Length: 576
Ligand code: FES
Ligand code: MG
Image 1 (tube, rainbow, N blue to C red):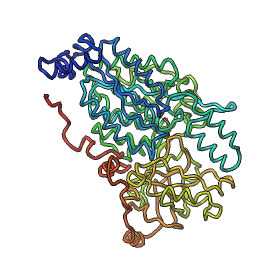
Image 2 (cartoon, rainbow, N blue to C red):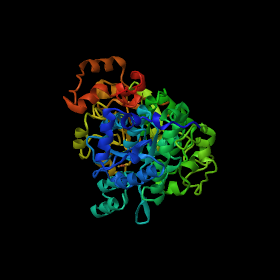
Image 3 (cartoon, rainbow, N blue to C red):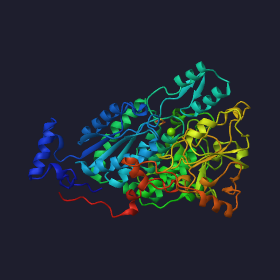
Image 4 (tube, rainbow, N blue to C red):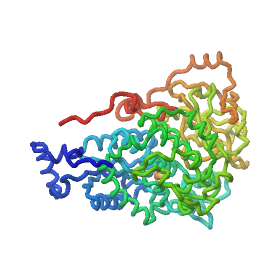
């Protein structure tokens, strides 16, 4: 393997020149207490840290950043920690998705503008992982992700409690009157018991697993629970490894390729992934110049068994169980015949080498291919006159009777309207109705919030109903479940057909045929379109305004047009 010379390091442009500017950089580094021994002829490594006091999933990141830095120093590098927006899924309003691209820009520009030769990314909570990966791919400096790790299992009265999933489940039980306030508070107290991201197969577990199979973490690192001391050792090892990655010039464009994205699709389906993965993987692939579409998800889903018995698609287990059963390496070894095993990983070895010999220790948690949770169908892509550019659902996370369903629409124009009406005793709704929420897409939401698991109307809950067909241009949490049809494109806010549905219109969903049909003739739809007036823009200024000018629709991954690889020539390094 050829190794770069110290003179060729990017950071040498800051620290190693005989000009006034370089003297100033050295003087300012000395102002921070460093001396030439700290930086001279050494790779400078950005440790991008999404820690904040308002992100419980990243509460351990100050410690982990120190572990990473220890590793960088051991290997002869110079660590430079840099904070980035922390995007806590549970605290950011209206939704972190509004800001995923902002963090992607921040990550990219932190790397571009500073004297750094490589990066370690500290991410975990839902949007942080795809955002920093998007930025790192565009910056294309050697990069390794330290996945934040799942929380320890929730546990209450001998039963596992899953982050998100059990909040939704027991909230319905509270509304349906089967548990009381005290029990509800007990559920909350026993669910999120440690730092780390959600330990269901929600968006965070999905996206960190996918970053892993993509090759951007140590293979198998994504399932190590956050409080496990192995997680700390993994972080330090990542610090050591990134220094060598710089010398080897192992950049993301050698790792994130069409072949590795195909591995991502297969793994996503075998995990029973979050629907949000569809949006993020589309965006990541586009940054890497890999052309995939919604149809690729549907194609791979039809051929891939769901092996991870992790909630909400699985029946019982959580990420801690998954890790103890062998973790991602064991799952990948079972998928080996479907994987491109020659793909490179950050270790410099191939995926095939990294997973060789990995064993499953608990067959009920990571199922054999001949005894899967489901033999296919983690994600289905539907199209029709209600969603010409597609929409998605998780067929295995809902009651199978909804796989072929026809019912009258009950339409809500906004989340506020839905909230006001949904629990009214005289709401005209039956279990066969199709609940529709619109104006909740990328521009309408704004930011495409996770409102797609519409609540079951209270009067139906009291009758024992726990699932219904629900359609929206929103997303839903990866920890959610039910017959929820999401990401309808184009969205209602820009005049997608969802805008023209009226109460009582019949809607037909057919999973087998992958169709979603509004039973209203074209002439009537055209007349409704002619009467329609576009809603007011959500933002008159600021980041939101910029977001609205440039965000793409769900079927394209919701990235900004000007950030996608195809938008313009690659950014060079100006000689200044
Ligand atoms: Fe952070 Fe779920 S809230 S991962
Ligand atoms: Mg989530």
